[in-house]
Length: 332
Image (tube, rainbow, N blue to C red; front, side, top):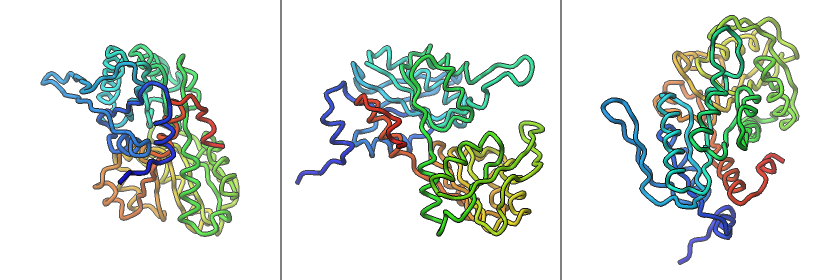
């Protein structure tokens, strides 16, 4: 009995380019495996070990010669280990005569450090770009950079995916008459993303004007738009401690919001985030699987957490890169 191939797998099989090889670091192997399942290719064999002195060693257990290599690694906890492992995997792949190496970084955490906003600090987003290039990466594939200008720190091609399609489709499926709701941007920096999702839902749009007092403290000043009696969809790039989220939800509730849904690309959920979400007056908080969310965190959030799958989107992007097609067509 023959097993039928998916259209994506057939397209890759018919490609006459160098072999497609997908490997994963340790930060998010389930996402890497899901990407491979969508592509119809096996996850590559590699091994990472840590010596007693905390040094890492990476070893590929198959040939990479002339291969089109994609290495999946999110910059998630422990971030420094994840970054170092990725650098070693890129360097080892180049040393093993890989034809091309693409760093697939679903969550590029250092994109938050995109400018010198206080004296004597590093612009770490640019430094990470320099390190990836120095390690030998030929290309980068990432999703929802906190600061889009980080794209410009690279001298190699960067494909910047958006989760807007996934987030808006989720709202449309889980909320009846989603077009009657309002997409709420938690600050001015999120208004462009919120506007795009509002257009996809054909819904209203609102924004909270706020000022940031420190890395963990913000102060809302006003809500621009009308949310009274309406279902509100709060969208942002990520949730870390959920401090900003609590303030945004409280403002929306104080202005008469009926139901509140939250969707972000990266669910980092550090520190008190899960406890805050569990106690928050929201129907649901959804994030994608760019960051691995442990089951114990999902259970601790009183059923309010949902994880959305972006593996098909990454798989299609990888297929288009491999076959030389446009990645932007995925968002048409």
